[in-house]
Image (cartoon, rainbow, N blue to C red; front, side, top):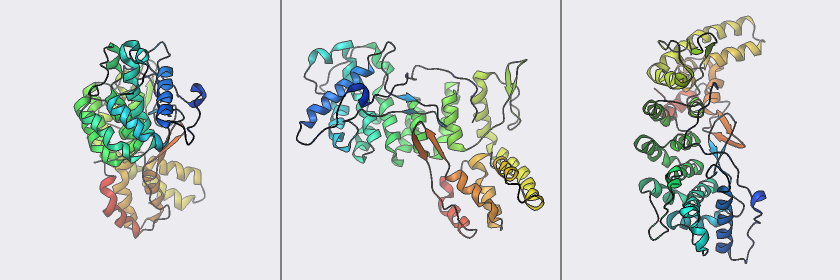
Length: 377
């Protein structure tokens, strides 16, 4: 994975995990007034989120293989039993009795409670959350009859952003197309991360279109594109000119750091299939020769296999073609690309499953049935 520089944006929130150890909230027991306890848990959570100098902190930015915002609900709001309560908060705002608290910071606690509810609904993973979260995508705004939030901070924390993340956490593939529309129409950065959570390759081209319009691609979005495409590039840095170059893609020349990722992915969109075929053909011949000459040199064979598949998912048609013609030794590349998983902090992303011991006769059928899900070009 390429990691060369970092940028910031208004949409990037500072990291924090709001856990029960911070808030002192115990799990809900039977017989207690659950709605009151849920409300207390939510009030404590948003108060804690706002107890910092730099606005509100709702998500954690990890240092794993994939840079996506992660969220852990406070204890008590992490259970399917809380879903009806959280849906009501998302749609109507919290029904806190403490009017003074509701109006603090010009109503921002009231607003952040809806954002927090959206994240909780996604993290819980209950399908009842799908329609309420989708409704926010279609019609964002203040709840009818709810508190009117007058703080200018509100624009920094759109409920839409957190509903988008919630849909990514929820994991329903029916959200892919709506999230692509939000990315394209509303230029919502968090849609990039939600689509990465949903690990659908259809998102790759829209994400590249988004960074083209935006004019930049930071290391987080680059990580998402690398994860989704499985493509990897060799980058060379010149200390004299302070620029970067790559021989993997043509006509890029020297690139400044701030244009590096954007330039690479735009060029990849134009010729990623050519790069994948060139990479596969070059290293496939070397790999076959080494198999004959040094069949026990597993380290070198693994290196050549990695180089052979450096074009990512775009090399799958070439791999399938050779397997169909009789080279079963390539089947591990298929499972490696399709079953590839990545980590965001402690949560594992896994985007597909095929049998590790799939046979030569099964590969063409699998590709005929599922190839459209993995074709990038």
